[in-house]
Each structure stands twice: as C-alpha cells, then as structure tokens.
Image (cartoon, rainbow, N blue to C red; front, side):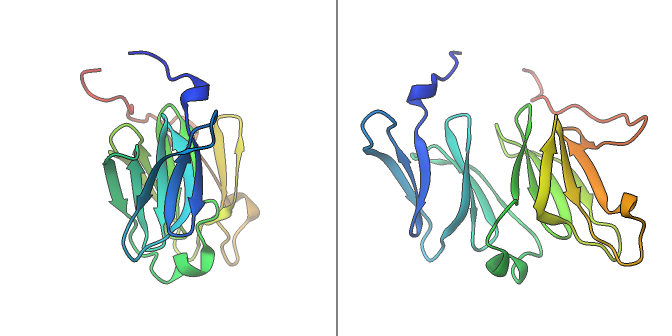
Amino acid sequence: MHARVQHLTPHLRIQRAAVEAYDRATGGVRWRYTREGRRPLTVLHARGEAITLWNDGLVTDTDGTSVRWHRALPAVADWLPAHGGTGVLRPLGRGILAVVTPRRIAAYRTADGDLRWVLPARKGCLFRPERALHRGRALLVAQPCRRAAWTTQLVAIDDLGRITPHRTPLGNEIPGH
C-alpha cells in the first residue's frame, strides 16, 4: 500500500446540490456526486475520499465513483434543517469519525463505516456540536443541562469513546489487519 500524495488529493467543495472534487493542479472537476432531491450540508476529507452530511441526515463516504458506506442519523429530522450541519462531522484521529448530534455522539470507523461506539446525552441535556473543539487528541463537546454543575456540561471524547479515569475501551482496528 502506498501513502497518498498530498497534491493528488482533490480539493472538495459543495456546489449547489452536489459534492465536487477538483484537481489541485489544474482546477478541473475530477468528479461530482449528487443524491436526487437532497443537498449536502458539510463535507470533509478522509483518505482521499469525501465524507458528506446530507440534509436528510444521511452520512456518505464516496470516492466519486462509488459510495463506500452510508449511515442514517436517527432523530435529526427536525433539528438538522435549522442547524445546517455545523460541527456535526468531527474527525477523532486513527481513522475514527465522530458524528455529533443533540441526542447522541456516534463514532464510525472511516475505512468501512463500522459503528464503534455511541454516547447518549444525559437525561435533560443536549450536545451542542457547533460548540465542540479539539484540544490535543480530545474533542470537548458542550452538553448544556438545566440546573447542573458546569463540570457536567462538558464531555471529553477521543477515538476510543468518552475519556474517563480508569477506562478500558475496546480497540478500533479492523479485524485481521
């Protein structure tokens, strides 16, 4: 296996109802991906491919010739159109993507879309994806709650899940690799 060379990785952008990949050297369109009746909200690079969040709550991974995997996000139909996808797709490192929505954070292996872990929001609380930020290898996610100490309103996660003292997480490697 050869490492991808930076200049070969296309530039991605959302153009109306499509995700387009452009050649960095020539500016020409390499490929275009659409879903009928849907529009992309946000897109990010992963291994030379495009991971896209669509307005119906579907997350897709495509290289322009085929969709490698797709996952539907539960309970986002009312929230997503008003939110616009800001902060929802969050790379965690080591090939793991966090998908942050108000009611849960789900982590997927980018190589195959395998669900690695899910962290539900505490009862009476909601995650705020647009207020999340990376600090080192950790992603800090705001989880505002009524009548709760500020220390319970911030959750730290990484590619292995919630960061807590003495945790014993499962690994994320693909079996047999």
